[in-house]
Image (cartoon, rainbow over all chains, first blue to last red; front, side, top):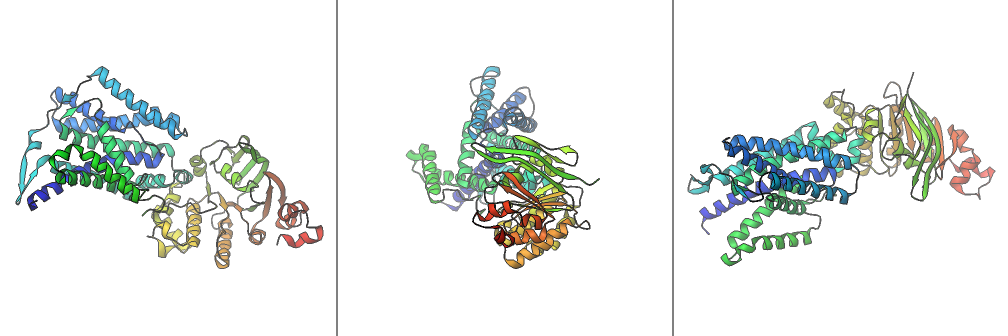
Amino acid sequence: MTIEVAVQQLINALSLGSLYALLALGLGMVYSVLGMLNFAYGELLTVCGYTMFLLILIGVPFPVAGLVGLGMAIGVSLLIERLVFRPLRGASFISLLFASFAASVIIQNLIKQLISKRPKVIPVPEVFDQMINIGPFQINVLSLIILLVGLVTLAGLVAFLQKTRWGLAIRAAAEDFEVTRLMGAKANRVIALSFALSGFVAGVAGVLWLSRRGAVSPTMGFIPILKAFIAIVIGGLGSLKGAVMGGFLLAFIEVALMVMLPTRAVPFTDAFALMIVVVILYMRPEGLISIKTGS
Amino acid sequence: MPKTLQVKKLSKRFSGLQALSNVNLQLEKEEIMGLIGPNGSGKTTLINSISGVLHPEAGSISIGNMDVTGWKSDKIARLGLARTFQTARLFFSLTVIENLELGIMAASRYDVDDKVDELLNRFGLERWAMDRAGTLAYGLQRRLEIARAVGSNPEFLLLDEPAAGLNEDESENLLQLIRGFRDPAGLGCGILIVEHDLAMIMRLCDRVHVLNEGQTLAEGSPEAVRSNHAVVEAYMGKRYTASDHGSALT
């Protein structure tokens, strides 16, 4: 492999990694605060995608449609918290899990009934497919955009979590919700904020995901939530830092496999990637970052 | 009129077990009350019920003229109640400063940075300010948990075995600190303290409340409780006679 190809693949891996890291952080944020997996998380990307689809259909420019899609993802995430999870506060893990599946199925079916069952193409700006030359390297513009947007969003979220009082409350709630309440932190607000941030991240990831795929479908949220779930399991369930690390690691594994596997085996990349994940979990059952020890 | 923390006819059941039964207790501001009793007598259940971690089946809890029975723990905390746990429950992945900030947030009327500096200084934690709480030695963790609890300037403070695992010097320091919280020039708060170190309880407390099998066995001054026959029996078993019990609880 030439150095040019290696650098291109590195950019690809970082680009995919920042996307997975965002997805994992959004899912992991709610998990670490509520101790519950929100399986309707993937549908936030779907909502973002269909909002963009409808807006682009009536002639709204792609970036504006992306911003409105992002806003919708935040709104629907807050709505899911208010209508589905808040009434069930204190319910068992299984009840919450089923409630989130129900929310997911309802959103999917609403889209099927109101818009279409079939995938729809979204025209993405042509510039996304172009290559630019940076020194001797030819880099795909979209990969670069995803990498930059992903890293800026991650940096913004980390700064919010590290530097603000609300961020501190979320990190505290992620570690011990009961004691955070005993500090007088308003539980409903901390939870709503974690859903809003989760929606924001899903929205950003949704715009980037769509830019790669160029199409929406009612079940398009499945693959992203699957990747996010694998990433947070690798990273260590409940650890926000672990979620980000897990996202990058999963992307590096996938890109490395795509490069190294013989052409005939490439369709099985996911299977090989999951085998590696199993090996990682066999060696570190609590994931890369254990929330018990914090290291 | 100063506030009072009042517990009336409180009962709590865990499936088959009656953890608390008809417990009455009244804690004034600027008062230190000891809560003692054999293991499983309901001391921690009482603290959990008062702080809103558990909800009692019967009875009431009020702070001042507010009936807080059934309130969520965050709302009770904002009314001026803070607590610590039997084994320190810190945010172990957060720094000492961040732990203190969280304690202060309940009473956001303070300038957080100034208050953090004051707490670091008062509790001798400056050297470890930027360390993660999980890396501190056990004695320091306990001290940090108490610092975090008083950071909100509570009117009532519930301490669950604060001296457990501390050496003699550390216990003595703790005792002085707790006296300072009661002092009207300091916090002026009412303190309910669960402790197995009976010598400490006898030295520190204005009144002592004794629980046994979820029921109040006795309440009164340390001297009165120390010479109470039923208390000695609950602690030491029936073999002890009246002549022994004067020294049994020292």
